[in-house]
Image (cartoon, rainbow, N blue to C red; front, side):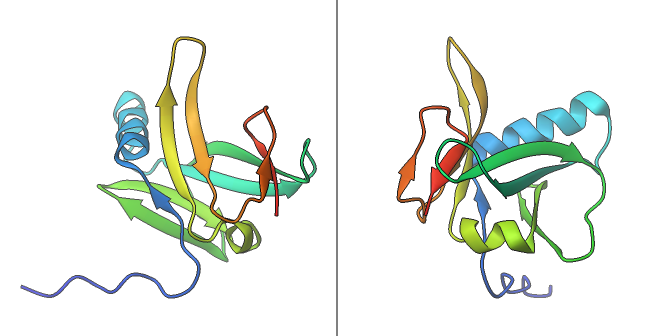
Length: 118
């Protein structure tokens, strides 16, 4: 048996078990094993940067793909620069549910849950 490949060098982002389960559930519901969760960061929002999630089937040139338990997260290089070390989780509550970014680089966050500053 061959050893597992080393983790990719450079900045990284990881998925919690809850986030991986949710992505796998989306893949199963759509009967599509190519689905990936895309996370992007853009300028703006209440605190300077805002995050957005989308479901996609293809990674673009320059994207990094991170895999946990068969669930894939895709992040572009520019977003990865401010997300290094972040954990992507999935939270379910009475009022809302969704993916959550736990970014150790954020110096402050906004109550909206999608905006942060460095």
